[in-house]
Image (cartoon, rainbow, N blue to C red; front, side):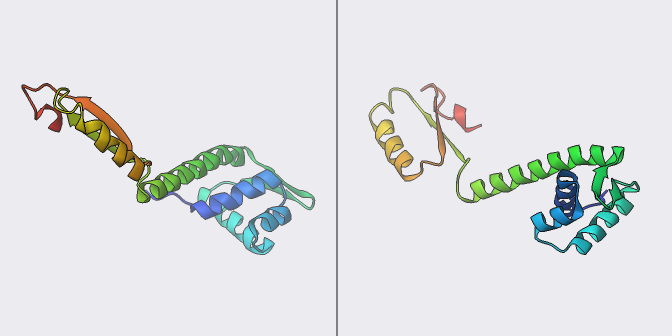
Length: 141
């Protein structure tokens, strides 16, 4: 089932809820106030509940609006985290390289290779794991 709103509209709703005024929220969002009012009205219609009490002096949240505000902030924060994680992954950040080695065989070569790799790729986390000589394929699983 698809949610009855888009993230953009949730951003609009949060701005109105924080400003408690359509005109100030529209200015903050750099959109026209009538367009903002229509978007919020459509959101209320899709949610099946009024979200704001409107007056000539501003707006205030209904109980349903208070509930949606908490969830909207959480959804927008999660969307920001997802976007940052995606950008980091695209740039190679957040990646991990696990290097398995046999302690006695890697004593001289591993530190040099590892230092060169870290210099070239500081964004990649490197984990070293020692495996027994008797089972060199133990770490492949």
